[in-house]
Length: 331
Image 1 (spheres, helix red, strand yellow):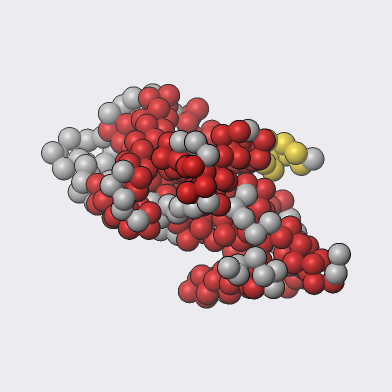
Image 2 (cartoon, helix red, strand yellow):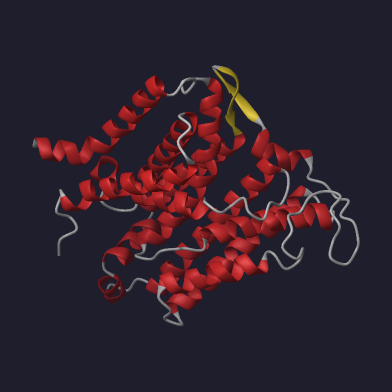
């Protein structure tokens, strides 16, 4: 293996450790339990959404609606518990159904209506952004709020639901690992095993690699593509559930950066260990990288408007290492 091959395969991992070392020196308090908790919390929701995006990338698609699905699920959870005064189980089921239905509609539009994936999911994004604001006329949902009809919402988030976003497990030191991180790890292992070691997952890769060849081989290509978007929708709704549980309210503006961070994590995953393809392990590492980057920049008091620029630079460099230097992007 040449030096160039080593750079392509391990360059991003070296960059990750280098980033940690730099922030450890440049940002006071970066190496602390509190900083770790903030990183873990930000990684969890971003990572769950990014894993959903990965499923669509595997079949050669792309889902731009994940951020709006997550915020819709968050608003739905708040509405069910605060306004309708239902329990946490009902709220979780409603959120998961929303994700599955949106994914099914996205898949149907793309597969049967032949709408390009970017256009279909972009349209769904705008639809959901508007739809989630209608029940409260654009206001966030919290206990004691006055509804448009003049009634008062007296329900509240249950303790069991809030624990999904706020409880932390002991790990060497007390209260270090949030529940949401455990959820991310479980989902990452499941989707990794599913994609790498099941026939269904391998066929999804085959569809993304050469859809026509997979179809000629007898694979139900349309079903695989639709299921990829259903997986993406369900994962996005899980992210929305975790966000609602962390905030304890339905904050209409809280999911603004979810799409960009999740997409960055999924695309950075291409560069991890030189994979040059969508993969669950790389996506999880990409989410960790984004979380470390944002936490370090925040602790160094970097202006908020520079953070997206820096994320973009890192993403472009990672993709250049993956495709340009390896030659895998050439046809």
